Length: 403
Image (tube, rainbow, N blue to C red):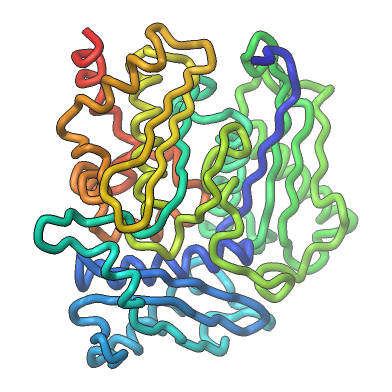
């Protein structure tokens, strides 16, 4: 494993067109789970100029019957949820406005052939909602046990969004991207070599004193987020490097659910199985197994068993037990990787890492997903029912299993 290198990760704001789509899809997941904790949801969203389109498959009590008939009032709730999400993000522009955009709902009943593989019946346990491989990761680069490049990229945009909503930076508009490049020595971040921030802005903030104000503001945000020892006169800043950025969000580029899977996970510092999260209920292992692998990885690092760890799980559609469990501590482990694998397999509360076992242990059948759909699914603060995969409550169990 290389110890000296440059590494870069990016993030996108809640107003990025793909993230608008993700947030709408997850708001629909939350709406349906609030009606039926066992609801099945696969909701894709398309956003473009003054348009939002939903498509996908659903099932749930009080939502839609098998013939595709909506329960009374649900279509209106769906549209209200979509418009409220766009309003919360802050889009009130001619090219994309929560109140005047056109909306189309093309959700329909879940395929009976998919349902038969997932549903439990007789002696058959509930199966995975699809085949696939999922990866989890954790490292000790930040207190959140996340890759530093991604952690800082997210936090820069979170701060900018908070200032925009608070109207302390009224020149900011919702769409933005960030990118952080760090220099690593002996595997530790020692310097920020480049910072890139592109933000949609109010008219006129691409020239003269107003441009200078915007750039000074961004540099101050970076200084507030990154540790001071990483920044120096040698740090390169690229702030709105293309110039004017007044047209943004879905008006500037179409958005689709699930196109920011590296932003959502580990910023390229770890492998990705390829499956997106947003718009999916937790029977889909693309989502739930990615959450449990992060949970396991974070607890391994928090327990001092490794400084860096990657975990893989694999599933077959309709089969409850995972096909494989893989642990790689990248040479940083204090015990053997196969011993950690065995320890995970011996912890009964994990339910054998079956789809239902994962959902039960983490409490995933709840409307907790809209808040995951911007600024990353991992490295967030676990509070109440939110982000349960970020808890480090498995540390003692891992240590006991390895004793």
